[in-house]
Length: 428
Ligand SMILES: O=P(O)(O)OC[C@H]1O[C@](O)(CO)[C@@H](O)[C@@H]1O
Image (cartoon, rainbow, N blue to C red):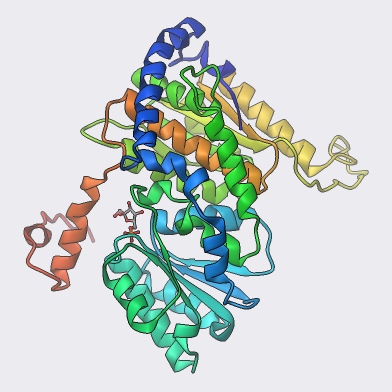
């Protein structure tokens, strides 16, 4: 992973090279704290050990019983789906990957109806084993399999904690089950059983994914000038402190669109604590040059833009044309056009003094994805250390869960009472 900070040095908000050098002392202290947490496999810090602790053979063995499926359906939500989706949506495979990570009834019914259930692996993922959306969707999928005459116990893989509803189900029906790694919150679990089972089913190279992550881990150091991950984490933190409260994650690759969604959970759920936190905005280049870029460049000075691209990609030529005005495109390629737009957007933001950071990987392949996922996780951990927030908890999401559960009769929660007390001003 390569990180270019050039376009933050003279931006508004921005940080100077001297400012980064002053911040580097705090980076060194944060790095020491992180390394102590990793050494003790402390909750959360353990995520940065996954390149060494994830057992790829265990994952490959667990999925080996599913002989050449047509599709794999992941039933999970948040970090229990987004890591796997980031990888599977970025890489080609003959095995189609689908994700049920919401409970929209029409969407779920449509997806289940379209699946070749007899030739689909159902990958149910939940660290807690209690997440209502995941369990409800699993019950719907299992019922559909039974009605289709498919023995669901032959087609289901479970990834869950040591206890809970899913663990009980796996034990009761002797289902293949993978553990979730101790001390790794869902949003940090892409490089573990949680995020890699789909990749294994699709035939992707788990070792290369973990090797890319290991490369980035090897570059963690006491100086942001020696570590791309810490350069990104420290700079985004510093820019937030100077007013860039929004970070628009804008990959210039369709294959990385899901990465922006994964990044949004990682950044928001880790850093949004006690009244602080940089808001991740999902964007996509070049598409959002015709959309959100107007706001990024000419709106409030409260944003930074992260521009991500692979340095190498397969290309598509643009045919020669005799159409006046289009001759400049003919004989070029879509890759040349996308690169030109990436660099033009970068320069456009700089010309407007809008801070932007360039993040590149060599290619969107297993190694590059491993670097990018691990690099952003490490960046997030460093940012959390510098911002002195509780990076690895997510207490604010619990209120809504209790309210929903109370509304459905799943318990007596005062949060549910607040729903009926809603102030109404309905305009028809
Ligand atoms: O894996 P589980 O326990 O189903 O949780 C799914 C997601 O829900 C959250 O716990 C938030 O409610 C996320 O942190 C997590 O990724």
